Image (cartoon, rainbow, N blue to C red; front, side, top):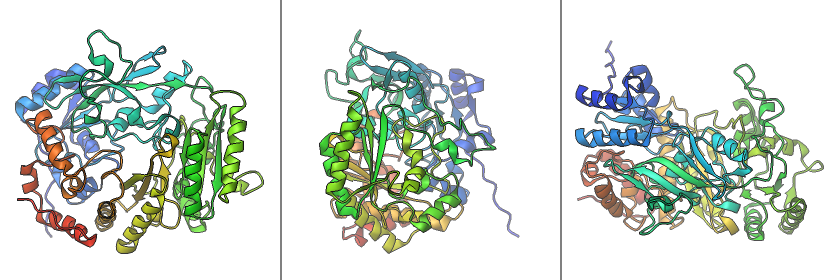
Length: 572
């Protein structure tokens, strides 16, 4: 019987490890195998899972270091440049764009769990400065004490780190009123890949407070917003706050908070909406009437959030996977739906007025509002969304089955029909890995993060392969790559992710993006990261990294291009 080879992670040279230890202290750095394994892949990371199956040791960081200050981050990055070892910046790992680490070389993981503070709130300028590990729960709870809030939350739980959202675009459910996360950044303090510290916005001007996102010179925020951490480390971030018309504390379901013994009880996910907020749910006959209604709701100026959830209802609203699958089989929720979050910010009459507008538009396009008289049991099942505007102390229960990759597409409201067509083609050509992969085929694609006035919507389709089955994960990758290729072939949407972030190998293999944005990003990388140590290969490959790509990967990507009527990408 053939003996399996033992998987041994890379180690940093002792001189390097000791230099890092001197920066953060012995208790804040480790190469303990049991610990570094927990940092060895992201939450949404098919490449990371496949490396595990292949017993590829390069998936495991050489060590993990926990800085406590911006200055400690700076010293760590300077050490990386001095000794020429790569590093990965990581917060909570719930949204990743590349396997961990991104290079076979011994790699440092910089994690920010010690930097979890809300630094300050300025009530006059309505801003909040946070460290990178501060989460949405903290942000909302601290702001609400002062009658403020940050205006939105991601499609994620309260534990999601707001700096992670900034580094990957930041898609809010409530963006119809305030715009997305990326549009609510006042200023950043960034440790650049070479160890320099950069500040953006008015805070960059000596002696000036952090209240305005612009400063003399070019607007540098977009170098880091959507960069996936490859342009620098967000050490501090200042965000916009808005008036909060409701209770001064985070609401909680009447059942309280779940524990291990009671987590299966869905009472913990069925709160009432916050005071002065109301959600309206409606179903439409088909995707065309749904899109027409979406556009008119957006133009009408009512509500703070405008979304179409589709199959996401079965994830969000059930406490068990068995319930999820039962609802999928029964087609329990409306196939073409819209929900609007209405908030009473201006007067006691605002909710009543907005309800009249909402009902009139729904009726115009054949929409039926869910109510005590029409599908009351479905409306009751949708109660977990009631705190969608802020999340709450329990968070959400979605993704009990493996959620391992996602495809975004963005554009005006009609993008929903385009996304449905592309995702249907992907599923028809390649096949599903799990029944919920069909979200957006038999029902509405998930549409959310609408800009004010509905200038732009994001659509999303996800895959849920069994993480223990490498073949199914490879199939899921094909679904994602097919959809990206079809998006470019049909000239739909602004890029790989739809919100400005670029990730390899898509950046280099789709020169239609930009066009040739990979050439520009390589120039940025040479300037910002001259030693190539910051998340190499994550956002853009260097020429040297391109030469090292496995031929089967190159052939597979060019095969997808050919399948979608595009010529091959050839690297000389």
